[in-house]
Length: 80
Length: 381
Figure: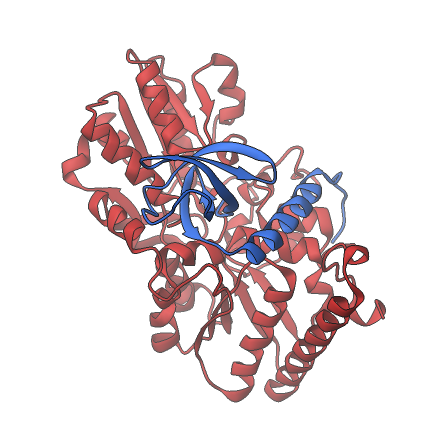
């Protein structure tokens, strides 16, 4: 639940932003990160930007998220 | 070359430049040497606990466990919010979901957690259980349904708490009086201390959560290092960074020191997000709370301050959280404390599977049991 997703702010009005993560656009608020500006990359958790993040880190996390999604879709199997 | 690294699945390696690949192998090699040397120096089992559900998933998915020396064990601690929520709290949500005057707004993670009488999923058909992605969505539900009381299931650690606080403040400013929260936000550090204080003395060190630390700051773990002399290393979710964090812990254990380190400098600062901390402090105060497996922990849960008391669902419906009874035969509590491995539970893989889960650690995709079930004990089979 505590996974935050890096996303770029593509629209910003007050503390209401539209962000883009891996081509998906959604609404997020910058209330917790007042210094965030249009074009910034931020970590978004539960609809709120919580931290700034750099380009390299964002790419790594996007890669990981796409792999975790594959993990979630893997058919269950008994082992261990 | 793969043999030497067990079942490690770093990235889609075929897409990587061979130089980057060699550089990564070199770093893994170095990390493994430090780990092996620590096992030899200490001459006993080393237990490192991760307290973040996303770490658990990343560790299993990437197969990190399969690369560790025999004497080094990773324990999945109380890092998944769904898993640590007490049975009593779950039963209260279900009780509220049965009321005609309420709409339950919850993050999707909670929907399948079984209580005494089914789960929220079984009640979704009645249209008064809504899955939301944000506390803001719950607030919007309140605006759209003025005749109903919205109960927002406010669970999660410090990462999620500020979002709830913002919604409560907005509800107060805009007088949205049919909005309420069932406060269940948990604090990570008190739980780590409670584990060391009584439940599990065998934990040698903590791999500290990445995104919780983005809010509370890496400095928040200083008390554990100083008072309990346990290394605390903050890491992100990339497999290589997790491996290097484990190696850093091993280096400290070999040297007999305990230090606070962060390898996740790209996101985490020592102070954390002070704006978010201030908003949490404005709305909430720490109160004693119940955790699955860990019982009652002093000042470990966030309760709404009196000035926002009218948004407190516990007060509005005159409810009190009790620890609740654990489900029959379920050993999630012991799993969360690192006392048993999921496969030691007699229900695991038999009557408890991800499709038909009994305990929360199997329900949540971040739970230790679910990860163990999918990937086996060593990961990435």
